Image (cartoon, rainbow, N blue to C red; front, side):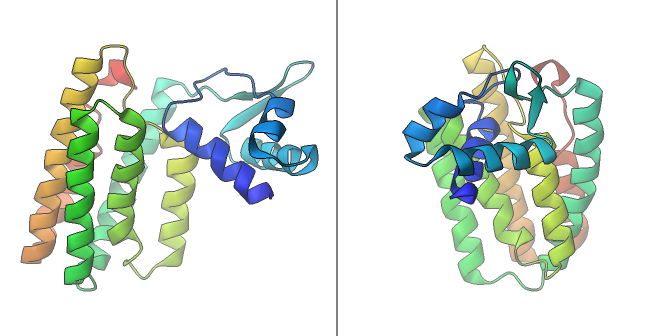
Length: 206
């Protein structure tokens, strides 16, 4: 039960449904997920421990805000670890894996066309997880999962939908280039592409 509550809140933080400083209503959450208050409270404590929430006396749990420098510092770490995961996975990636990534790219294109940022976030994460899961390094996988859940959240966020989805489309084009590298077993270009993929060009949108 606790894991179900944890995953629900973490997903809503990741996709931008729950924004920084949003107060978590424990009673409403219990009713929505049809669980008792105990697993909700346990999940909230775990989320606070994992840096997604913050507990404030007399106010309760709120979505933790992260300053820009902290986010940029984490993106630099993720870029190196994600590139490492991809290069380790290079020889393990199968045709089925490539087909999965190609399918996710198509779904991401559709999400962008429909201006559905929640789905965009969901499927771009699934895209990266295809090769991360093939890195054969559980420590690396766990580190990336922790950093992405706790710090990365939605990569870009903006009230300007046209700009947001233009940037998202650019990032998905980079996904397509990564697939070509996996097909060609081009380790050097793949590593370069992924590190560039995590460079934040629009700092005002994070």
